Structures are given as C-alpha cells and as structure tokens.
Image 1: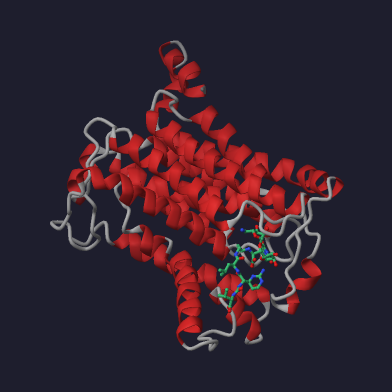
Image 2: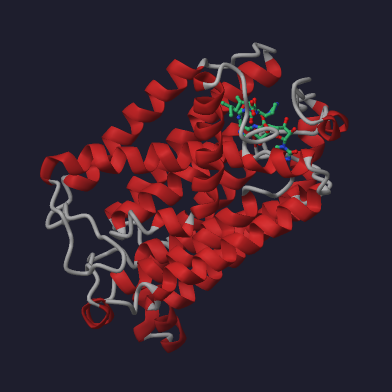
Length: 359
Ligand code: 57M
C-alpha cells in the first residue's frame, strides 16, 4: 500500500524514490512485522490465558514436557497477523504472486486454526482428524499449484541444484509437484514444532535465505549471471520473506525457552506452507530440501521410526521420533537440542546459498 501511495510522489519529494527499491522495502517489512509481534505479544499471551487456550500435553511424550501443560497456544494467529499487515503495507499489491502466497498463508493457517480450536478448546483429541486435515491441505496446495502454473510464462521446469543443465520440464504435472512441495514442507515444519523455538528458528533462517533467492530470481541480470531461472516479479517475494522473517523473529522473543507461547498448528502449517510456495515460485524447489534440511531430517526420522516399528513388530530406531525427542531422552537439556538444531539449519542455509555459484 505504501508503495502505491508514496512512490508516485517521488517527483515532488525525491526521498520517496527509495520505495522503488526491494532492499529498502524488505528491511522495513521485516522491522514492521517484528515490531507488531514484539509489541502485541504480551497482550496475545494474556488474551490466550484469559480464554484458557492452553496446550494439552500428551502423557506418552517426554516427562520434561509435562510442566508445559497450559502454555498458551495458537500463537500462530499473531504471526499470521503480523505477516499479513506488513505485506499489505510494504508489497506491490499489483503483483499476483503476493496474493498467491497470502492465500497459502491464510489458507493453511485456517486449517491449523480449526484443528487447534477443536483440540485445545473443544477438547476433541483428534482435532480435524488426519484425513480431513490432509485433504484440505492437498486441495489448497493443488489450487495454489494451478494458480502458479497458470501464470503467464511461468516455467514448469524443476531446478536441480548443482546441475544447472538438468532441469526436467513437468508440464501440467508441475501442479502436483508444487502441491507436494507445499504440503510436505507444511507438515515437516509441523512435526518439527515440538520444542521451544525449534520450528521458529529454522523458519527464520530459511526465510532469510529465500530473501536472497527471491531477489536474485527476480533480477534479470543477476539471474542470467548466476544461470538460474529468471522469474519476473518474484523479487517482490523478497519483501514477503522479510515480513516472514521479521514476524518469526518477533514470535521467537516469546517462544524461546522456556516458552511463554506456542504457535499451534495455525502457525506451523502456515509457516511451512509459505516456505513451500516461495520455493516453488522462485524455482528453488529442490533446494528447499537443503535450506529446510532440518525439517526433512525430522520428518524422515518419523518415517523411518514408524516403518521400522511396523517391519520389526515393535522395535524402534530412535528412543522417540521426531529426532528432537530422541536427544531429549538421551539426556540433552532442551535448550541444547534447540540451539544445536539451529546451528545445523544455519550451516544448511549457507550450503544452499553456495549452490548459486556452483554450476
Ligand atoms: C505436531 N506437536 C507437538 C504446539 C505446537 C506421527 C507422529 C510423529 C505425530 C507427532 C505429532 O503429534 N505431531 C504433532 C507436533 C506439540 O506441539 C503443539 O503442536 C503445535 C505444532 N503443531 O505449536 O501447540 C508438543 O510439542 C511441545 N512443544 C514445545 N515447545 C514449542 O514451542 O515444547 C511445542 C512447541 C507440545 C509441547 O510438548 O505439546 C508434539 O510433539 O506433539 N507425534 C509426535 O511427535 C510424538 N511422537 C511419537 O508419537 N513418536 C512415536 C511414533 C509415532 C513415531 C515413536 O517415536 O514411537 C511426540 N509428541 C507427543 N507425544 N506430543 C511424542 C509423544
């Protein structure tokens, strides 16, 4: 909105020319989203306590979690609010990619909200139910994939990191591929959100990484130099990722150990969906496996644990899955697990950025 209101005045007030720069708007979108979260956080925590929207703790989990019972949850509402306000303020709203990522953010947030509400407020332990939740997520992701596919001149090639000349063209199959990336990332972040700040930290790191990817993909000359797909208009997603990073950073102020608030499915499903759709639009889909490698490791630990359990009639690979619980049960204090997983995320983000130069 500010872009539309203030940039046209740059002839009269030359300083306003700064609003044309993606870097400027990314920085201030980050700061705006951060401040909204930081300033509203205490009120949201009080409000959730008043409404008694506190986390139910399953008895089959680590004993160290039992004293977390009652922690206000569904804090993802604040994250979504911050991202939406900051995006509407700082993005070029004529850019249709912005509306696609907002659809994914709010759509997955709504699915998570309903699940949280049924579980935490209506005390229905199954919430929406796995099947219904998945069906809604897949439907939303397929709609998103269709909208991206229908974008004029959008490439349906899949970028393979390290192999610039290997880019299979999926054609209409790209819709299903995009949907899988979005649903997969959404659920991987959801599984990871099991310790204080364990999901927020790596989401922040991935969001900052995709600021870079969105900026270079949207810049014709840089994209050509780096031999990556130029996606006209995707530069605006750098500003969106700025809002995503700022909001996550602000939420982390309250979600860090010992957490005063959890994000709930309304937060984890929407954050994962946002990362997935940004990776699709910036044509860095497979690279998300590296950038979001921690989410992949956590999801794979569950898949291996459940598969091994079924194949061996009850034996386990890990003490408990996802992987963060395994280290907890090995005796690592929660903060040690969290910060070490953050360190792994930072290393993976650096590795992913190095692929921009490798060809
Ligand atoms: C999402 N939710 C956390 C909080 C957060 C198939 C199986 C692997 C599914 C998985 C599962 O239920 N996943 C659901 C993870 C939960 O966090 C809430 O959920 C939101 C995210 N969706 O925002 O509202 C608990 O995580 C802890 N937490 C924190 N700090 C945070 O900032 O401490 C969350 C955020 C919270 C709190 O304790 O209650 C979760 O863990 O459920 N199931 C599991 O992950 C379970 N693993 C398991 O059953 N493993 C089995 C098989 C199935 C693989 C095995 O290893 O044999 C673990 N989780 C629970 N109990 N709750 C262990 C058992």
